[in-house]
Image 1 (tube, rainbow, N blue to C red):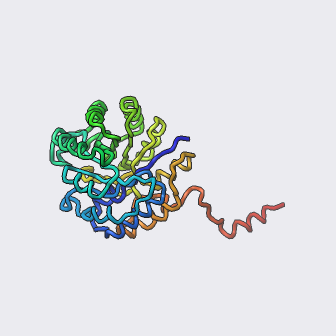
Image 2: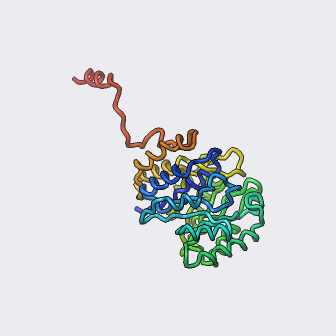
Image 3: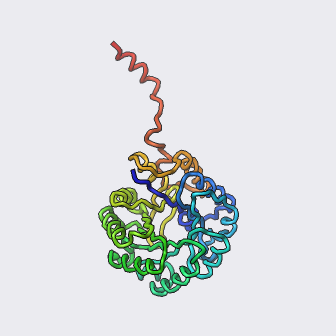
Length: 313
C-alpha cells in the first residue's frame, strides 16, 4: 500500500499561538523525541520577528541544540530576506515560505498585498539556491473567512507562479478549516495533473470536524504528504473559534488502522502526546492519546468470568 508521509508542525504552527512560553529545553526535548518517531519532516520553528511571535524568539537556540536524525528533514518558516539570512546560519534543510491566495487574508495576516508578498518571497527563493530546498505554503486555498470561496483557478495560478521559480514543493492549506471532502478531492486531482513534478502536501485544520475526512478524500486521490500537529495544537487567529490543525496521532492512528504505511512509531508518538498537556498547561484536542489505540484491549470486569462459567453446560 502507498506510503503516507507526515510533516510534524507542533513546535512552529502548534506553539505559535500558545499564551505561555514553552522553555527552549522543552522544545528541544520534544523535537528530539519526534525525530525518533519516523516523521519525514519536522517544522522546527519560525524566523519571524520575536515581537510578532514571542513564543518562537528562541529559534536560533532551538535549531542549534536539536539532534539531527538522518532521514528527517528539519524545516523552518522563512518570512523574508532577513529570515532567510537567519535560516542560512542555522543550516535549515528546507525553507517554508507562506502567503495567502486570498487578498484580504494576506492583508490581515501579513499586512501586505499578494503581489508584495510574492515579490519578497521571490527574493527568498533566490537566496535559497544551493543552500536549502524551498516549499511554499499557500494559505486559505479552500476558503477565506473574510472573502468566502477561493476559486480553484486562483490557487492554481499562484501555485504556478511559484513553480516557475523552481520551488521543490507546495503545501495547500485549509487555514481556517473550511474544506470539505469533495473539495479536497477535486483540489488534489487538479494539483497533481498540473504539478506532477512537485512535492505536494496538504494541510488541514479540524475547525469544523472534517479534518480526517479531508485527509481520506485526498489520499484516495493520490496525495501522500500531510502536515499535522501533535495533540491537534494550532489554529488561525483570523478564524473565530477555530480549533487547531489535524491531530498527528489521531490521523496516523486512523491510517495505520486502515493498513497504510506511515513509517511512524505510534506508541512512541502517543507517549509524547500524553505529555503535551503538561508542557502547554491545558488539555489538547487529541482523542487517541486519551482513549488509546483501537487494538489496545482492556480486561473484562471480574464478574464476566463468573457469568461465563454459569453459561457453560
